[in-house]
Length: 360
Ligand SMILES: Cc1cc2nc3c(=O)[nH]c(=O)nc-3n(C[C@H](O)[C@H](O)[C@H](O)COP(=O)(O)O)c2cc1C
View 1: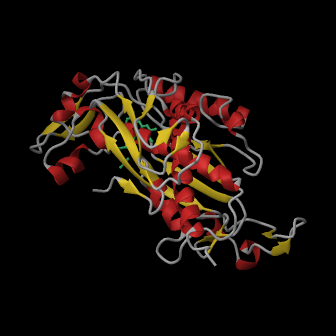
View 2: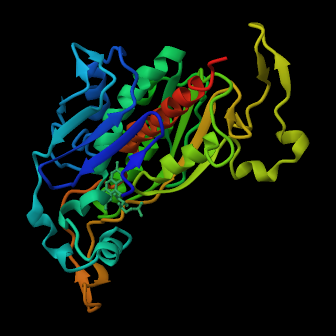
View 3: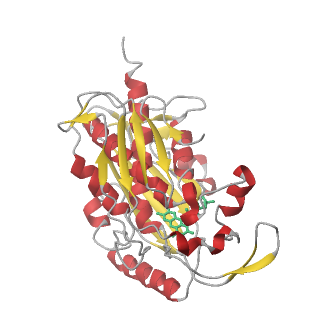
């Protein structure tokens, strides 16, 4: 239960961190869509561990195998199954946590729910689960390109160090120009220094990813419970370590008055109706208004740190958890492609849902 997302563009992810492999089944992707497998692999490469000193040193190639639903680079309209085999699973690193609960990880709650769990690497609670989302998201993104939709996410804040990035102009090339994935070079350098300091100190830091979807036409989203920002918030909150989501002006908007906050309408040069400001973050009444969709997503500091931590074992006895394993001192750089994938999956689903209602 709980491993599915979407109504018409529907995904089911599967797999554990240290099992034989992980992946996804995508159902509902329209037939005859050309799919570039290299773009799926490129998305997975941006998510992979071991990309730089700033992330987990687990050595995984994360090579995707498409098992069904695509032939000669074109979708068949049948379920698309994609698999990535685990290569560098080291279950021994997790002998300790079989008994002791990692503070602020999912060990205690999985035990409370199931009474059994895949101990190594956190099982389904591992960020390796997001491999399936990223692979599916890369297909969703290729579908969205049919409407001219363009998605970019970037690291906007690390441990309170904030960037100044123009969301209307930012490109993926600028995001990928440095290891932290912040397209503001001076601030990126300060962020990298901060993550390095945390890593050397056996500690971890959190931060904020910002994302924008440009070119989304007006009309996507389904009131009432499936409002576009509600589905986006749900999708983003499902990413491991996410603790908050903002759309548009978010919490900062609460400090403005209505006259400051309202987005005035005007007729654009191309004849379409636009808004002069975008405090609404591209969504009003749960439906896209044609302006860029903007989001901020808060990630907590990585739970597993390289320091001894006080905790308890399964029986409630006090114990000290020794630092072991390979972990991300900051999950933010690897979270960027995951955020883009979740954005693509929700938008692709709503694109199809809107199209299904445009018969007359
Ligand atoms: C890209 C990415 C990498 C992560 N790497 C780690 C890690 O190395 N160690 C860890 O303890 N948590 C890591 N996490 C977070 C855990 O998976 C998450 O905190 C855990 O499942 C508990 O869920 P919650 O934080 O959402 O409550 C990572 C998350 C993401 C998005």
